[in-house]
Length: 222
Image (cartoon, rainbow, N blue to C red):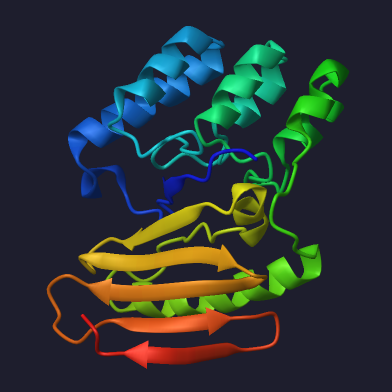
C-alpha cells in the first residue's frame, strides 16, 4: 500500500502578498519548472521541504489549477517522473480548473503510454457519489469559516474527497486570517474533521461527515 502522507491544502485562493515570500518563490519555481518540463528541477523544489509536501501545488494566483502531475500529463513526461511525483504526494484524482484529472489530459493529448500510471488507484473504498456529497458538506464548513476572516469574493478551491481515498492522506486546510483551519481525514468511509484557531480559546470543533449528514461531535476543546 502506498505511504499515507500529511498534505497541506492551500485552497483559499488569497493574493500573492498574503503569503510568505519564500513560499511564493518556491511555488513559482515549481510551476515554472513543471511548465518547462524540467523534471529534475521540479523534484529538487519538492525535496527542499519548504512546500508541504507540495506535489499538488500550483502557482499562487494561477488560473489553470495545474499541479506538476497535470503538467507531466500535458507534456508526456517519462513514466518515472509520474511515479516520482506520486511518491511525493501527487494525487492522480486532482482536478484542474476545468475539472480534468491528469489522466484525462494525457488521453486528450495523445500520451497513451501514461494512462495506466496516471489512472487513480484507491486504497480506501469510497463511492464517487458519496465522496461528492461529503465534499459538498465539508465545503459548507470551510466557506462559513472563511467568510468570517477573508475578503468577500475570495475564491476557494475545495477539497475533492476522492483525492483522500487514494492513500488515506491526512489533510490540513488552513484558513488565512483564522490562525488555524481544518484537519480532514477519511476513515471507514466517513470524513473526520476538526477546526480551531490558535488565538481563540474554546474554538475547537469536531464533526463526522457522511454522505447524508454533518454531525457535530465535540466543541470547545481548543
